[in-house]
Amino acid sequence: MTLIRLELEDELTHLTLAPELGASIVNWTVRSTGQPLLRHADTHALNTGLPGKLGCFPLVPWSNRIAQGGFECPDGWLALTANSLTDPLPIHGSAWQQPWQVVSHSSNEVVLQLDSTTPFAYRARQRFHLSEGKLSIDLHVTHLAERAAWHGLGLHPYLPRTAGTQLQAKARQVWLCDTSKLPTQLSELPAAWDFQSLKDLPDTLVDNGFCEWDGHCLIRQPDLGYELECHATGSDYYLLYCPVGLEFFCIEPVSHPVNAHHLPGRPGLRLLEQGQSVELGFSLHYRQLN
Image 1: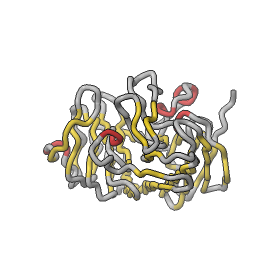
Image 2: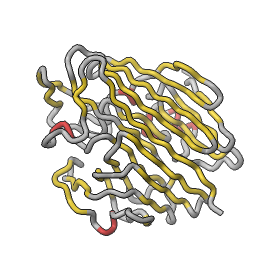
Image 3: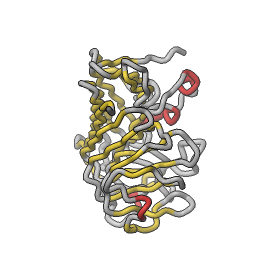
Image 4: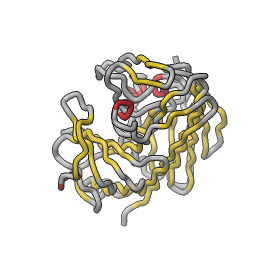
């Protein structure tokens, strides 16, 4: 089967989308040079059919992992099953594993939609817009099921990493995790994880959720000659994933911590009745370094 690929351009950048692969971004590049601004996905990566091998995918109707085989809703327990061959827990919701439909497509904007019945009925929309080197992603979800359920949102971009990659993303606390990658306690920021000002990424593994984020983020790539000025809305948290020895990292704007369905007060989650909606936005603005 030949995958549909949608192309967008502005004055500076070029975006490729794969609606059938969870409405994923395949690549976002600089038009004049072909420089990847997200982790480059080659033909092999695309042919795996796995959004986690591409540039970015949506997290709907929750982000990251959920423990205990499901979660409690007002009308009872919602059971979940593991949905990834690489993780024993349900992860990243269901939208990334379903084909989305094209609602509209112009030279610099695409709107995609998913009507899902898993794990409950919801409608998700993603709007991608390019303008003067700025990629804007708007994620909007409406609850369609008769029974209310908890919703959370996020985006999962993969970004190039070199020895010189630097990050600024102001947060106040971080969730420490156990061996199952579930949060155990809130902590003050270790010095190596304090990105109040621009700092090199840690050499050790980071796979943690950061809290009380102001939504602003700067990713500087001096070895690659550019930076990304980023801004999130509807997101008080970000997840930072820095695997050791790999040429990418992830900073994910999310509406809630990992396993929020089982944390006191369900921080960041929204209990939606039929017809109610929630949204999250994220923009990444490319600038060439002099």
